[in-house]
Image (cartoon, rainbow, N blue to C red; front, side, top):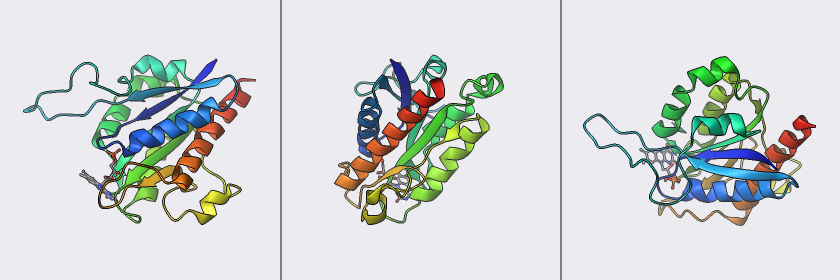
Length: 197
Ligand SMILES: Cc1cc2nc3c(=O)[nH]c(=O)nc-3n(C[C@H](O)[C@H](O)[C@H](O)COP(=O)(O)O)c2cc1C
């Protein structure tokens, strides 16, 4: 059984719910399963840091997860049109893995959630792909052969999976958002499996 790392940060639960849909899609590929992990929040020196393990949800990521998995799907809420600081903080600590090519040649995809429809989903997704390209990942998107990509009135983009949480910050993905998240997970798992053959 090969694994795909689904690594995300989520404060309000929207990105976490998309992560679970992506994990479902990964699990639909025979022989593939998802390893769900989160990054810890970051704190200024004047604040207390997070507990060593999260109170609930997915465990914190360990560096060994990157080497042990055959692909990665990275998720973050949109913060001012970009990824959240905890995700960037984790990525900025991967100098040794960059030198060693730990992620080189592995398929990678991204996902996000915003409050508003045009609040920066695509800029967030594209900016999250940049460090993955530096690591030598093979970026996987969602093709327009997926009909939901053309008719969605909520989230879901060719650059990655997404959710529009709205002004009330509703974490529940729409049917199209959930479907496209599963499609993305399935594609990453399928490509990782083919690359391993
Ligand atoms: C500091 C901050 C900045 C944000 N910036 C944006 C933004 O640029 N565009 C947007 O649509 N939503 C923005 N949001 C809203 C979050 O992206 C949105 O609530 C998201 O669904 C949260 O995901 P989560 O529930 O997984 O934490 C921001 C929220 C915070 C706290």
